[in-house]
Every structure is written in C-alpha cells, then in structure tokens.
Length: 493
Image 1: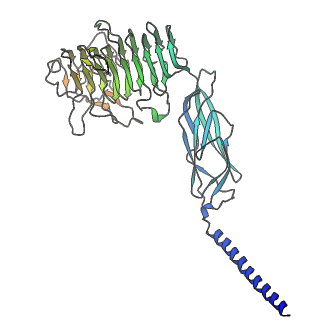
Image 2: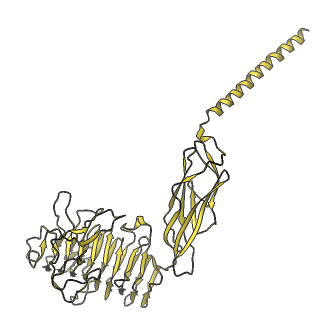
Image 3: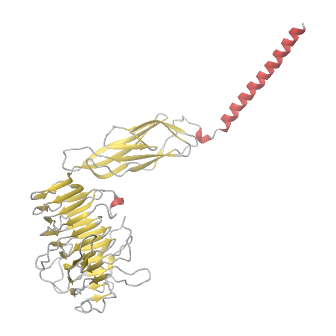
C-alpha cells in the first residue's frame, strides 16, 4: 500500500513537471514568434506587388560582341512584411542580355527574399551576338518577377549595330574604310610605310580602351560638311559623351607624310593627333587639318615632335595639358582657328599653346630645331581664373638657343609675358581682350560648349579677309571684307 502511494505521488509530481515544462516551451515558442520583426514575416497576400526604379531598361547602340555598361534596376518592397519572389528571369531567355541578381551573375533566380520596406538590386548588361545586318536593329526582352502569383515585367530594349572590327590590324596595301557600317578599333591599327588609308565621308570610327591608330604611311580623312567623320571612344552611353582618355589617339610616325583631315570630330582620347614625323620641309605640310574639332583630350589636342602642321577653320578645346604642344621645333600654321582650353573640369595651370625648340627624350640625344609659327585670324584663349587674372596661355621656349620665326596677325591672344614682344604687340592683334564666346563653360556631361562669338563680342569683324578661305568651321560664308577671328563666323540671329 505504501509502495502504491509512493508510485502515485511520483506520477503526480512527474505529470506536474511535464505540464510545467510543456507550458514553458509553448510560452517560449509563442514569445519567439511574437518577437519576430514584422519585416521578416513573409506575406502571401496577392495584393503585395513590387515597385521598380524604372519602367524599362534601354541601351543606346551596342556593337555586336561588345559588352555595354550595366544598367541598374532597383526592386522595392513597399510592404511592412517580407515578400518572397518565386522567380526572376528573362522572359525570352535572350542571350543578348546578362543579369546580376543580388550580386550573383545569373539570368534565373528562385525564392529571392526581400524584407519589408527593403530593396533588391538587379543589374542588366547587353552583349549583342554576331549578325549579318548592316543597319541598326532592335533586340527586346523583359525581366519578369513572379511574386504571390503576380507576374510583373520590366521591358529591356537595345539597339544593335554590326561593324567592321579591326584588332591588332596591319594595313599593308592601300585601303578605304567605308561608311556603310561603323569601324571598331581594338588594341591598334597600323598603316605601314608607303601605304595610304582613306576614310570615306560620314564614317564613324570607334576605339576600345587604349586603342590607337598608328600611321607610318598616309591618312586621308575625307569628311564633308554634311557627312563628317567621327573618331571617338566605343562607349555610347551619355555618361561617356565627354569623358577624356577613353582611347589613345592618332599618331603619325617618323615615316608618315601627306596626311590630311577634313571635316572630322576627334573626341575623348589621351591625345588627338600626335605628329612625330619631322622632315624639315617648310614648303610641304605633312599634316593638314581643315574644319575639324578636337576636344576632350586627357593630355593634348595636337602634339608635335618637330613636325610640319597646318590647321585651318578648326577648334581645339578641353585638353588636360595643352591644346597645342610642339617640341623640338617644327613649322606650324593656325589660320582661323579657335584654341580654347578653359572648360570646367580641366587643370587651370596648363598652357593652351606651348612650343619649344628642344625635344628631350629618355636615352635619346636632344632634338633641337627652331620654331616657325604663323597664327592668323585665330583666337587663343582660356578665360580668367579664380583670382580674376588672365594667365599666360602662350609660351615659346628656346632652350636650344635658336631664334623662333614668329608671325601673328589679326588674332586674339591671351598673354602677359609676351604682351610686349614685337611679334605679338603688332599687326592688329588683340591682346588680353575677352572674345566673349557664347557658352564656353558648362557641365561636360550635359552641356555642349559653344565657342561662337556673342553678338556683343569686341573682337567681331577684326580678322583680315583671306580670299582663299571663304568658309568657316560650319561651312558658313566668311564676311568678304571684315570676317571674324576664330573657327566660327558670327551670324545674325
């Protein structure tokens, strides 16, 4: 009997303890559930829809087999609770696009959790496959999101373009680059000595990172007013529209001769034109530039090592070092040109025009030769600095002791040091008089500088008429008797 009571007492106590333990576990689980943040609780409500940072993804023209820059799509969960995206994918599975979902490069993801009031980043990149089309074409797809039985889409559109591709190319016979498709240069193209490369009017030449065009023979750029030839970086996105240093540049090597560039736009390189072909022939210019724009260079617009360069009706602007840099002497003519090197974003202490009679290169003897310079009907200007002064923008060094041959006429010149020099302070030159460009400065990514003369420009009609030059950079007629200095003739508005 006593034994049975003992057993009964044990059972009663054990049952009570178990009851307490179960109650404790239940309470703990309830407490944990009750303490779970609302934003971590997944909702299955069909009304819980995603929102997006954009209603579509669009790419400007992308060349075949060339990757675009990435576009970002932010996916927002505006709910207080979390949502689970059952599926993210490309609707058509188009291999022209690549997704990166929450840091993972994949075109398909499942069960992606987005906490309440949080977001998810999806990156989209275009890489157009090879095609035989010669004209631009459209490729479409859509990023689809499936959440709680809701299917939402973001359309993706790109404009593809086939092209002629030149990669580490050696041109050994005379060649013509046609304008029916763009040309894409990767690494370099080299034109051999004695060989001519002609580029048709309207052609567009795009360069990959650090790519260059090396001319040992001859380059003929045959643009026209209505069909200009373009040289620029391969990136087509708006962000890259005015970024310097995207490609290397065009270099004329020692054996190069008979080069001409007409109606061209050369943009966003390290240097625009590098003439390293001195031949000491004053009667025949090895590089002729006409009605051409060179802008947004990381270093120089035109760099010369003792070469013979003539530029007419041309604009050189926005260069990180100098618009024109001539070392080791050489023969130079700038007629109806605007050299304006003071746009926002570039170093203010650099010179717009800089010449020296000596070229010093590592492990090479000095190259010494005199500077012969003609500047006529031109503008060399960079504007004021923060201290409201006009810094020198022209320098001519004679380290080798040669005597420069200088002729400057009817030109607007920004110089302090050379203001009393007999070649500058004469011949109807206008020293340190602001030409009043229409809009020389601005934000490079959104604004296009305008170096035409304002209606109130004090230098208008101050050039000297040259019968052999009757048009300006825009192919507008020059005034027959009192034209304007610089690349542009002012027109009545």
